[in-house]
Length: 449
Image (cartoon, rainbow, N blue to C red; front, side, top):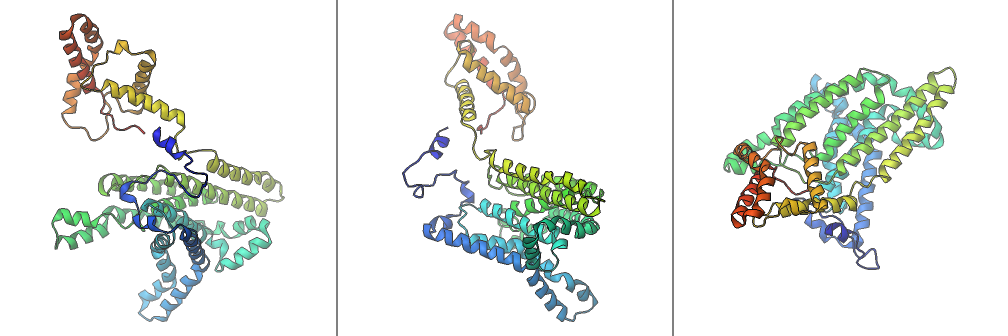
């Protein structure tokens, strides 16, 4: 509660003098960014966005230039087969590293995870343009932008003309991603680095030096962008080709197996952003839904005998835009409502009082509010699987014995506590022992959010 009050304080009349925000985790802080002069921050942001836009506009020409250089090399039939796509492959392989370098040099991010968040946003933009819309854009992004600016209403029809014929390409695109997840599970980069470092350091030091994995490609930003683009392909093309949907289901099942293992058991823990990646991914899905609505309106307008089906489907575009605005503005996901914070502190305070070893609080003497708070907390933990027999990871093996031994004491706690008042000091010691059993049978509580 005090932290939320501090974030809402106005320290001076000049709003530009003080900026109060939630601090990132200590391990993620970019200390060099805190030394930037305030007057240079807007200049760096403008320069960074200009470089990113330059990459978007000249991505295809640069890829074509590298491809033409590759074709000049005469290295046999194998190279001749790879050369036509080498430009695009090189650009897409180095794009996350290039973007992270731009963000690190030009933006004041204060934490490494916010660099990953910027990567998630812009990497998704690149993939939408050069993976999904590439068939409609063609070889020149300039010409496509000029055409859309002159005739905005022709954009759905342009999508309908070019995109339906590419559904088989996207099915192959999804299937080809499956092998990448198998390679991700092996963590070959970390394995090679471990064997190299092991020749110079102890095994424990070698393991420490191999972590974390490559954050440009295996970081949260890049992963979220790649998963969002597969979901976008499923949403956009599953109506045109229903086989896209089951392939996407298999894809995300493999993702669940791969990242469920890597994040939990193999990789080091990453700093938490409080849901920034998830909310941005939801917005990316909304963008995919907008493209789907535009495509369907174009398909109906070009293939229907009249304009009635397209007119019926057109309001869906406005609904998608309204949904995007509502998601972006209606939900305050960055901060908890104050009433929830107060209630959480009340529950925490009740348990802190009851859990003190040096003090005994007789449950019968608690007022109705504290008793209801304890019951609410117990019911909430039982509903989420935190209490009773369902326990999270991190318990010792001896906890089962403690719980079995503590359960009878917990059941006898109210009776022992009632008799304690009549038996004096001796009864008080018995009540303390009973309440200690109640504590042992309960779940170990971590800090509540």
